Length: 467
Image (cartoon, rainbow, N blue to C red; front, top):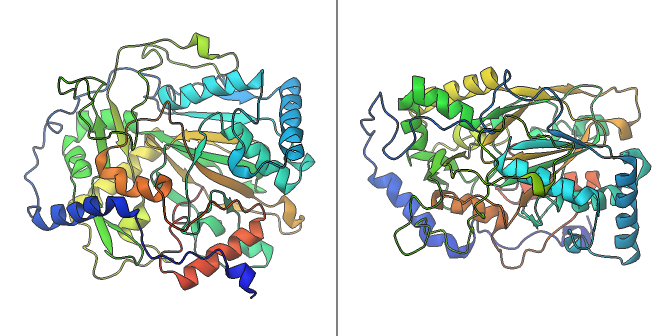
């Protein structure tokens, strides 16, 4: 292996940005000083939390989710020409990947529709699909340019998905491409339980090629699940919101940190301390979104005709957020749980089991087609993946291949709870000596991650949850 191939490997061993060290220490102290188990009230939600969230587009299940494709934006032939024009421009200018944004990838007609879809992801259904890119007509590099250009309308801040600074993660079945069987969910075709990806605001997936069969994803509204729990199992809300969930850091020091799984952000202004601040201690790190909500009375959001001008200001509502990575809590074959990390309590295990059951009960299912995107509000919509299979007789280029990105829209982003700053910092924080990496070739991305897993104990941090 040449020195050039190894030059990307980071020379640091820190799991979190150094400026969050105090918060990490605080997390450890909270766990050590926590009573064995709080005596949760069984019939009420935690103090200050809503007994029920008011009707809103983000509260949906399989029976109430729109069936008219209003959540799907279909790119028209003329809009595809806009994409081609923008693509040629960034190629002619030889722009680096990091400089592709809404200004450099201008889409005069499609852009406003994407902006409106972005509003829907933040304040509407929490999910939208964008269809219509003929991926087979473009090179691997061109498809990445298109991904960066289109996704910039949902968020121009791109998160770090791996220790080496990777901003793009390729997802495919390694075994069908001649690699050894791989336990990482990113590189196998197994089913995945419901989860959020590591703390990111918006999860973006771009399907270059679907599988021959299977590979569908299901999505579940956390707001719907919360209302169910508040009515039937409020004790589980206490369990999920307790600060004693021990998350594996995959070999870093400390070996685990603790935080809640579930969070409640009151309506803007409710936590105001009287000085005009939001009272969240959030400051500039995770700026509060501008106060804009789609009408809670709107049951559907039609992305086929939506523009920013059609959005309406509505009464301020609180938000329920979650950050759940089951493998960090229970371990997996690729990352067995170290014996030194506290085990989940029976109550925590029961809460996870119920949460998975409710996700299945209320979820909708969708399979990405070739050239389609999904943009997901990762803080409040859970997702899973069904098993998939590629036709081994078909050319390997036609096998399932997705690219994942973590995005943040600095104007519309929800407030990040302080307890999530540690995980949020891993994605959007700054790490000395680690540059952004944009690997276009999927096989190179695979080899990069495998070297990381061999040489760094936390090399799988970007591959623990997959689409």
